[in-house]
Length: 106
Ligand code: FES
Image 1 (cartoon, rainbow, N blue to C red):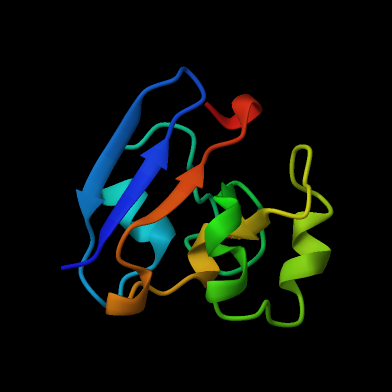
Image 2 (tube, rainbow, N blue to C red; image 1 turned 135 degrees about the horizontal axis):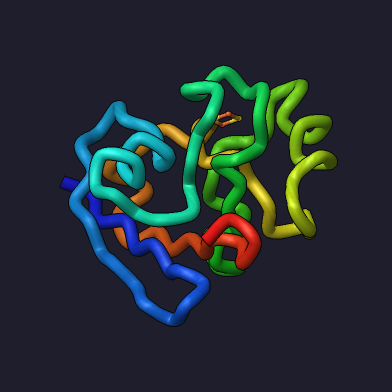
């Protein structure tokens, strides 16, 4: 099962096995990772699942769909590493992915 590491803004990190087919957001919510509220349940309508992707992973992720960029503009301090975690579907290729949770969401 792919392992995803969630870096919390307090310096803690949690590495979790997330089944293929779930999203990075669902992996966080199901394991009580603080800071990923996912208010809209994955509908790309809230930006409370905003995360920063570790630089080495940025180009390995599926491209953003229409709408993700617009929603990220409303997130807290978006930058070029920003993604909506509800739009990243876990697969074997993502084993070892590291994502950071923005401080204001913690
Ligand atoms: S959960 Fe709302 S945009 Fe991802």
